[in-house]
Length: 314
Ligand code: UDP
Ligand code: MG
Image (tube, rainbow, N blue to C red):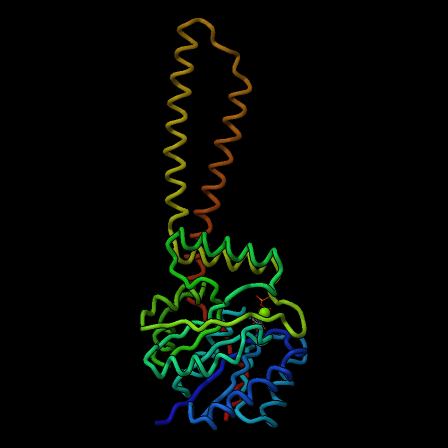
């Protein structure tokens, strides 16, 4: 039985790590072929509009190393879209596809285990971190808070799983039918619904370069994740509105009682307070609604997700 494995690696300004990444990935494929686990392999580096030497390095590896292919995007479209660009190419050429970050913080030694799990009948195999010892305190806790928030909003996702996963080519093809532009893959993949399993590993530090996800990008990602999947924030505005009407009724009673008992207060402070309070809530509400309208705006434009400039395949 022939089984071809594609490894998709999105790269944004990763010149510092790519040689090491290639040095580690190629032998893993070699070994799996030797062991008869797979019969062929490819590594697809997707250059996400890097400003450094990433693409020239990728072209060099394509010439000199086995398995290495390159996809050059015409600009920076973000991690998730770059990943989709790679998946789209790999889905036509390989039977199983693994996605992993260029910095190899996720342990590549569990790749054979993932492939084994596919052979045992799982279409999707999630790589799940055991602990987050190497992440900063801040990153660990914001990530935890985010997972909890997502869950409470009803978005099914796998705890401590990022974008390190194996998918069969039919799962990837199904995933590509989700045509939305605001992509939050780790929320969409469980919706594909095929049989899945998890493989556990320890997450390493980045061995070179720095995180391409500064706080601002992380926050954007979190907001996208929530508003692309859940309408609960909109419902919360409604509840808030109901709550305010109840409060207003209480105040009305208070005002009437004060009036008829003859000691109506000047009431300046309470008036000012309510103006600010209600004004603030209206603004929050508008903000949330605006968030969804913004999403609709982006979706209806139906723009292409990326633009491939060059492809180096083998
Ligand atoms: N990445 C990308 N486009 C971007 C930002 C990041 O393709 O605009 C890639 C990056 O090269 C890496 C992966 O996404 O392969 C994850 O980024 P990083 O390791 O910096 O994130 P962290 O591990 O800090 O969450
Ligand atoms: Mg990383």
